Picture 1 (cartoon, rainbow, N blue to C red):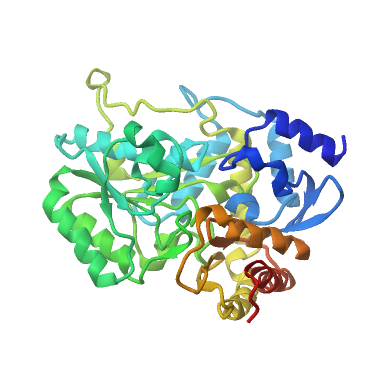
Picture 2 (picture 1 turned 45 degrees about the vertical axis):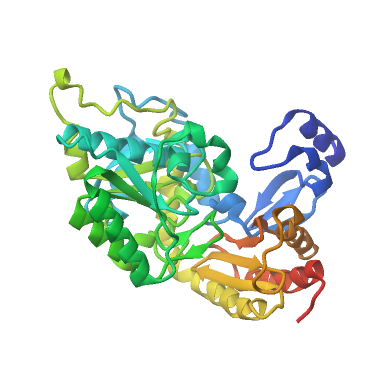
Amino acid sequence: MNTAEYLQLDARHVWHPFTQMQGWLDDEPLVIASAEGNWLIDTDGRRWLDAISSLWVTVHGHRKKELDDAVRAQLDKVAHCTLLGQASAPSIELAAKLVAIAPKGLTRVFYSDSGSTSVEIAVKMAYQYWQLTGRPQKRRFAALQEAYHGDTIGSVSVGGVDLFHERFRDLLFPVERVSTPTSLEASLAEVEALFKKKGKQLAGFVVEPLVQGAAGMLLQPEGWLSGVAALCRKYEVLLICDEVATGFGRTGTMFACEQEAVSPDLLCVAKGLTGGYLPLAATLASERVYEAFLGPYAEAKTFFHGHTYTGNPLACAAALENLAIFERENTLERMIPAEGALADGLEQVAKLPHVKEVRRRGLMIGIELAKDRVTPWPYEARVGFKACLAARAHQVLLRPLGNVIVVMPPLSLTVAEAQRIVAALLDAIPRVTGVRG
């Protein structure tokens, strides 16, 4: 089939995520046929720099030989087997590796298949933990305004993006909200006030450490995460860190928590876990949390939760090789030159008349557009989308979050590719807004 035939068939049968399907074909969608390195190739043979890592998951680039080989080798052994009542070699090896590189104190790994489910599991674990330790009144959760933790009912409940979640409000459980942190002292004071008032009812506080991704790459003040961790310890509230987006090098360290020496009670990871190859997620728990679930069968303390593809051997094999590449290629160090080139170029982007703010932590970047650096464009104007569409003139694929252009390239980005992204932004934003610097 040619591209037009693919798109017509797609329009008849495929329902795309976070997409208004009424205008799908008008949005000039691409049909991807193959990939190479940091580039995607469509059915017309055009090459596109994957500057969003295929929704924030690709780490070392596409068709990385070592990752391809690892998955093929596992195929010669077994593609899938359940973890219910048995174990598998790749899942055991990966669990040990995750514990070895995770923040100190996290000792147990529970597998699932997406970021949403990893958070759902953490919420259920925290809830059941307090039930099992004799404090059943601790059954509520706290989370940030504008938080995003996934799209299953539990993860939506702790999420706080009204555009995504408000319509489902009647399906959700109530959550205590804390303002998006801007001032360190004011925000920590707000958290402590909540904990003083309702800490005896709070099972856990769910946070995206350092960066609130889907909220528009909102950055937390330095010291906020460590301050929150201290308050959680003081008031006996479990700290749940959602590193689905920030984990595996995105903020410059393997996990964002490391930058403030924080060890949460529960850690959620997904996206970059397999290098962007296969769906896999994990919820890491402390030994204290894990031990609360141990007991005679008659006590029914078991964590009754699971997924058919929990610990899938193919995905675990990919994840093991992904982590091996980090070590073998010194990925976190090798990304520094491209990160620096992006940072330098973004200083020019920040000067454009319709750029309200450029927010960056490592290779997580949000560029917020506004009419006069203050007034947002209405949602329906789709200014962010139009800017991303205009960036295609430079063979760069970007995706917006409303008026925020997200730049989140693979960690294998080169300096030349970083410069291409900057050039695309410097051209696309003025072209769409009609004002050049």
